[in-house]
Length: 428
Image (cartoon, rainbow, N blue to C red; front, side, top):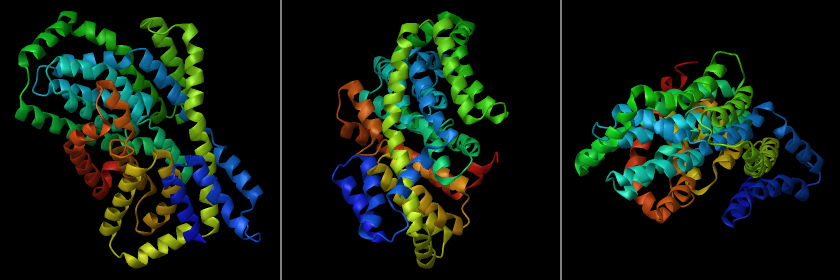
């Protein structure tokens, strides 16, 4: 029965059936075939409601809402100006400023595609104006956008925490060093690229002079409220003042206050459109989370996690081999699937086997999310590619080809995080 359920799930995905239906239909299939099965229709319905009955999930649409308000408010431009002021004249300074902007904006939005859209719309024209190759610039933003799901507060970390019963706050802490490591390696590649290809120093110097005319205090004054955003959100969580969900509420009020009162880039009459947009974005994810939770409980009734764990532990006797295997599995899922479905469905199933090999649920979650972050810029379903490519009128596959070297550095970070657990567990 387990094999049939999994086969049904993957066939439905291959046929392009909506993801919620891909989990709903296999959830009711065992009872439809065997009326004595415990997981009847009422059980599935209760499981859907139970999966959504979590205050942590409320943080997802709230972070989506605050991220969209801040994107409209131009926070990415102000962040970029601050970093470009300090490192803009150095070799690869501008591309590195873009990566750091993605890192900071990820700490605001919690979403990879949102980071690509906000930072790419602003930074790609600047990069091309300064003489950087258009395809390289777009690939850099698409890849660095993956930092949005690694650096806290991360929406996929919230989903994983709820699906696997792991502390969201601990996951946020665990994502800090891996996120910084990924950003550092992406900047290292940008430096190597710029040393090999060269830069238009005259244009870069002229751009830097424009920022210098504002003065250090002027640039910091403009970017102060943007820089303060992750400090307020993460500082509130780690100090124990607020929970992740409460921090999401704070981020909305902060975004509205800053964009209305200081930057004056958002009008009150525009706010209802932001609220509606957040609901529309979250509704499909909510449906998937509900049916994904029910599917997970059906798999537990079928003893799928235990069976898979027993199979893996009997077939593999090395923790190193196991870690390599799960990286391959989740890389593949990230390439062909959707981030949320991969977390909700496969996360709890593989976690049982991971724990039998002595892998911490926190460490496992970080490995899972980094793999799926790489999947965001990997064809054929790389969402970041489809967000970034239209910004320059190019095909996603052409951007993906240029992103391969960046992805190799991303993979290097993944391997370091996989085999050095302390990088994830340092603050726990």
